[in-house]
Image 1: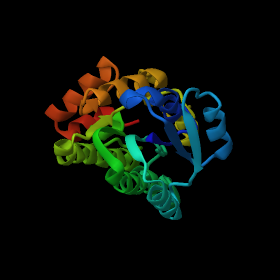
Image 2: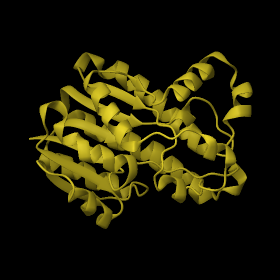
Image 3: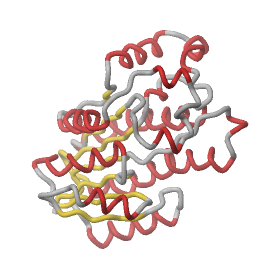
Image 4: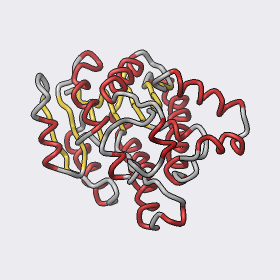
Length: 252
């Protein structure tokens, strides 16, 4: 049975991946949708046709969820053709103004959960499978007032590059996606909307187009995807110029 596994699938970009993932890798038999909010997961499930859906209500900030996931893989022994690590958390504010709990939560979800779930899943993947790690344009350079978030996403981008090299001999594709701001509830949860004039001026990308473009590029074996020309240019600048200079413009 060919399956796709998606985290953060209850809303926003994760939900858009869920709506489109069934046609990947020649067609999937089942999707495993992972998120904390059960009702929203089932709402996404209702919009998916032509593929079985299994909703897994797991809080990825809780390490106990990893054991639940590990045992499920062990019992089912699925043929995982697609893994999309989309679950993410970000808060706006100076480092010292964000609670220690929220700073830790960003690390738990963006780094620890992504790393553990990917490690647990890879043994069930074979040639032609794909992994999509959702990073951010914030990974290109440190982002003052989103310091922890940008640091966690730098980890995600680096992990994707390393995994891509390691898994290439096995024919498993790894794609890092660097979305720009999107009009999703991520902005509300992170207390970003209305609290950053710089952020408000940035171009937005469409979650549906990002998901579709990411899945297409993963199947082609691409290594990185940054939507919108404006942010592609920003990515190049971050490679060419010192980050101490870039941070004058990256502050949100």
